[in-house]
Image 1 (cartoon, rainbow, N blue to C red):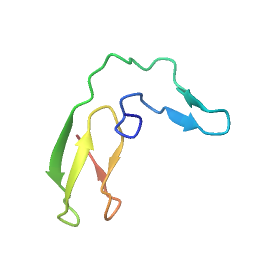
Image 2: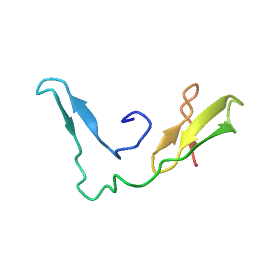
Image 3: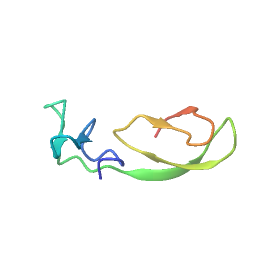
Length: 65
């Protein structure tokens, strides 16, 4: 769920074994949506998510939801 952006910029702090949510203004009740799009640069089909910065996993192009 963290990888898909459900918790904003949250990450797992493996040293302290906890989830860190750096931005306390993240609305944890916001539903994250996903859709598949074609990358305009390389043509790959990529899944992008709302409420998250998306990049093509193949060529690194920034993608909009």
